[in-house]
Amino acid sequence: MRVAVVWNSDFTGVINRFGQPYPQPPQPWPHYGAITKSVMAALQEGGHETLLCEGDKELLATLQGFMPPDPQARPSGLVFNLAEGIQGEYR
Image (cartoon, rainbow, N blue to C red):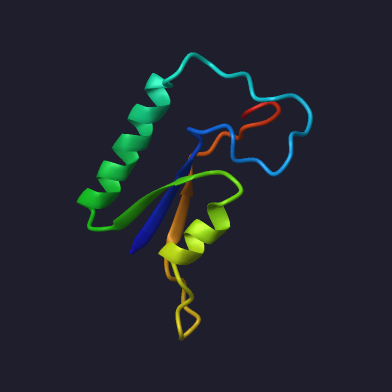
């Protein structure tokens, strides 16, 4: 199965700035990158085709290219959302 893993590593891909910007920690986020790599590795070891995607304004186009519509209207993949957001209070 195709699995897209979504995360935030770039804070510039927004349509517009609304409200308070996300408070940026010192880069890189050591725990976040390690967790993302572990998830990707586990999915690949399970036989899945993976793609790491930035959770920004280009996400839908990226997903459409990675998981094109199935001719029989069946799901063509899954999205694993690790994105925390790039504006406002994160989870």
